[in-house]
Image (cartoon, rainbow, N blue to C red; front, side):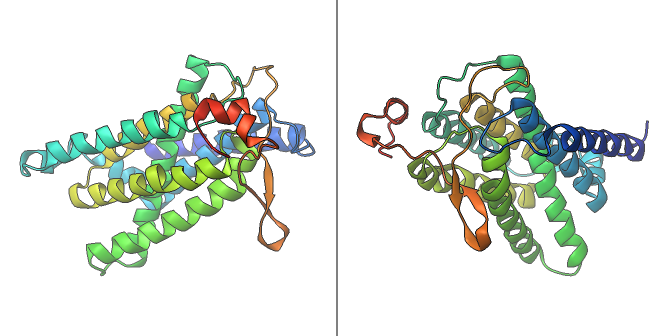
Length: 271
């Protein structure tokens, strides 16, 4: 089976999921969290990430790259930097991000949350690599530092808009507060993307780049207790906050009594 035929299959599956979503959940009220709708929305996007990486040439470069890059045998800094990045991801996402994540009593469902986290964790870095290759295609004669800046800008802008305007409103269950967002972004997300993209640019380490993001986002899936599609637990939907041009964004849970709120006290958040 060729790379093209595999992605043709992904396109078909993604289209089928889109049709199912439109038929079943087009008029589903946003105020009611539906695990099935959330999973369909997520996997439609994951499919688009796979296709974007394929169309930009990122997937072909990934498959042509060794799992361990050549730099492993030529740079004495490769192993300690790789180890340090791995430790950072574990602390940032399995430690800090998890500690400051609301769960509202949602249960740990290891098989479903592991599967969701792994697919999420592969799709997002494929999207990032797609932006990297898009930048290479746009600016073939630019120096590497300039390509990095363009790719980093595109990734940052896209992630901000996607996460804030869609993911945290229509896919993820309520898991943040205004305070946790204020601290999670600079403590986890920004350094993660910045450091890992620099690492990728220096060492051309496609597979390790994806593995690091998969490690991070699998931790997120467990930490926020992503409800399985078959879950019947009541799950509060994301709080919709006003944004520009009449749009809404995911601004986090706002308590009427922050000092005595058990959910805030459980994660040590003041508001």
